[in-house]
Amino acid sequence: MKEEETSMENNWKSIKEALTSTCQEVLGLKKHHHKEWISIETLDKIKERKSKKAAINNSRTRAEKFQAQAEYIEANKQVKRSIRADKKKYVEELATTAEKAAREGNMKQLYDTTKKLSGKYSKPERPVKDKEGKPITEIQQQRNIWVEYFEELLNRPAPMNPLDIEAAHTDLPIDVNPPTKEEIRMATRQIKNGKAARPDNIPAEALKSDIEVTTNMLYLLFKKIWEEE
Image 1 (spheres, helix red, strand yellow):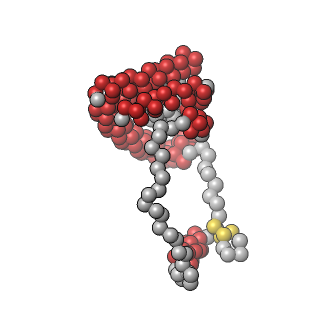
Image 2 (cartoon, one colour):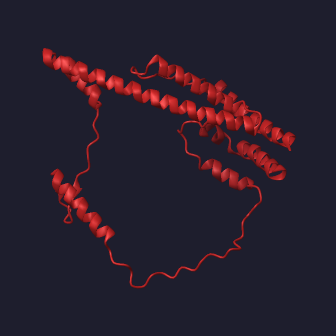
Image 3 (tube, helix red, strand yellow):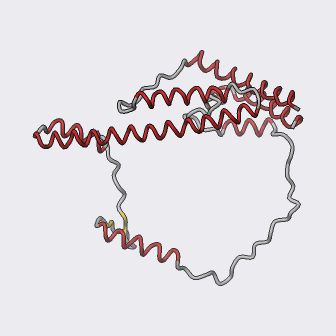
C-alpha cells in the first residue's frame, strides 16, 4: 500500500513540476514589491512561510505532506499577526506625525499624512432609502429604517399552508466511478483566472493553457487513484 501511495504522489509530483517549471521558463518569477511599513522581521517570516510552502510541494508521502501543511498554516498565521502589528505601528506613527504637523502649521505634511491615513480614494456609501424610495442621509433615521425593516422581516406570520416536502429516498444512486474526461474538461474550464496559486504553485492559467493536455494528465492520475485506493 505504501508503494502505491508513493507511486501516486510521484505521478502528481511529475505533473506539478512539469506545469510549474514551464510557467517559470515562459513567464519568469513575479517580483514582489512590499509595502513601506512592513518590517524586516515580517519579511523574514514571509520567507519562512515560502519555505514551508515549498516543503508541501516536495513532500513524498501523505504523512510528510500533512505535517508540511500544518507547519505552513502556522507560519501563515505568524505572518498575518506580524503584518497586523506592523500596520498598527505604522498608523500610530502617522498619527503622531500628523499631530506634530498640525501643531507646527505644516499644512503640506499634514495633508500628505492624512491622505495616507485615510486612503487616497474613499468609497462612496450607498444611501438608505425609505419605503417611498426617498434617500435618507441622517444617521438616526437610517438606523430606525433598518430596525423597521428587520422587525417586518423577522416577525412575519407562519404560512397558512406549509409545503409538504417528501423526504429523499435513502437509496439514492451515487456514482462511484472516477471522473470522466468531459467532467475534468468542464471543471478545468470553470476555474477562475487571476487567482493566487494554491500551495501547489499551479496558477489557473497554466491548467487552462491547453485544456486537452491537462484533461488527459489529470484523467490518468484520477483513474490510478480510483483503482489503487
